[in-house]
Image (cartoon, rainbow, N blue to C red):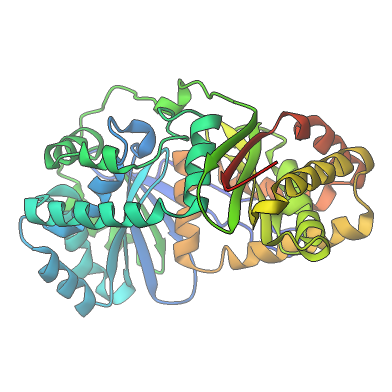
Length: 430
């Protein structure tokens, strides 16, 4: 086993009421596979992740990455899907996958005592899946049925067309798994994706574990694998050009309500003003006590709920407001959204309202860092997006130090109420 390469430290705990990100260690197996170790929590559980530079940004066909991830547990050289599930259930463990724009992760969650029994099952799933034809066709049929049901919903169509108009259907951030896209994927496409994208992995271990024992186990299972350094590959999101369309786009759909998606392009996740804009967004529409909720739900009665999000992807970000409103209220609801954006830009926020949002954001952070599984996801995000832990913790410095003047300045700089893309799905007569 090679010696430790480096150790990344989170900043020391400060006066804020949040759980600071702990230190983690990185080492390598004898074949060069990086392993990130993060002891965390008091409960005897652990999560091991195999992470790949894969995901939707690296697929050739829409849906290819997600279907590959789902099929990994449908059969291996030693287990069919039923036997694999029975083995995992017997140990109180589970294996699941997560696909994002920049990564695909296969995760084993288990008790510390059963780690030695369940790690070989993870090895089977990620190294020797068989992608059985019958299970693949069954999965496709189930997904086709779900898509058919889903596309009858105005909210689904609004999300689909918002992505198309803002980014474009060929952009990883605007793509959508339609029936046609799903029909185009074959079992061979999944095998090819596995062979091309799911070979060079990194491993993370988060929870309660014995360092030397887990490293020996990982070395035995994964240390002898051939590791040929691949040519550097870049997500298609890095080179794709977002459409950035504006104006109102109607999609006719029968029903009592219309679904709205309003927004515009924004900065990527690594932008220095990203955290500040998440605070601006929270004030505007990011939680139940937001301005949009008070105005459009409580005062006007146009909707049961309305929320906004300031989304920072690695290469492109976007701002979105989403709600379902009565068809007759569509123009008024859109006008009120724009009015609230202008108000925040022109008048800013009082200290009392900002304090309320500070407390909300700090309190929410505690619930997002309680378990080893949550910390495991944060570690994967940090590694796959090349954002250090220290940078993730900078959010809380921003929350603490932001002023009403800063909020107004940020809102005026980045909110674009007069340049919104407005997608309306429903029956609307203006």
